[in-house]
Length: 114
Length: 116
Image (cartoon, rainbow over all chains, first blue to last red; front, top):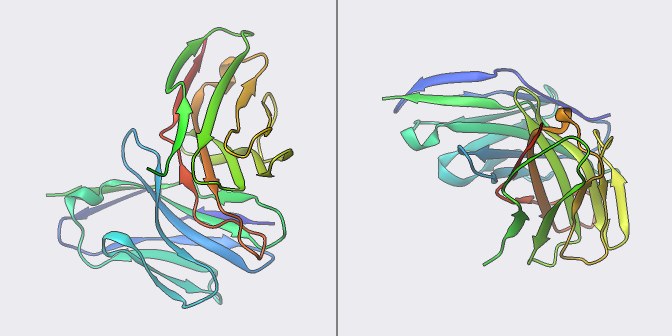
């Protein structure tokens, strides 16, 4: 069965410092993994996705994530935070089972201090 | 413009009064899904549809119904709303990949429902 654990409910960084948002997953099959961002009062927008190609995935706005099968992790990083990065981030797993369930993590709220 | 449109965006209703939240997409996506978002719980899947006339339960389907009579529309029906269905609801759509899982999900702006 699928599950997603986002290890931090809140992360606070200073502008210009690196961002690390952690995600661990459990999947019985070959998963597709995604990171989505939600700005206040908005829907969710795709940041990046892993679908069994390169393990280091680059996304929009300078974000990237590395798929580590041995650690069952898919952590999101960015070298230098910007004020506009303040939002909630969701790690998502979708399994290759012929079904179409998607499982969301509980979310990590990123705060960026000036 | 490619988009997923939900209506209404905000609704306050009373217990037991049937309501429908509409969802429409203009991208010819096969897959559509409804989620509810509650603080600290992320998004939980209510129902999803792989194509017209094909629907299935997600993780929290109790108290909800859906239908998929047309490819573009996927309404969420609350036959007898209760206060525990107060939540923020999102509709999403996606192409289906050859391997059977979903591609990128496109989300609507959300519908905030309050049941008194």
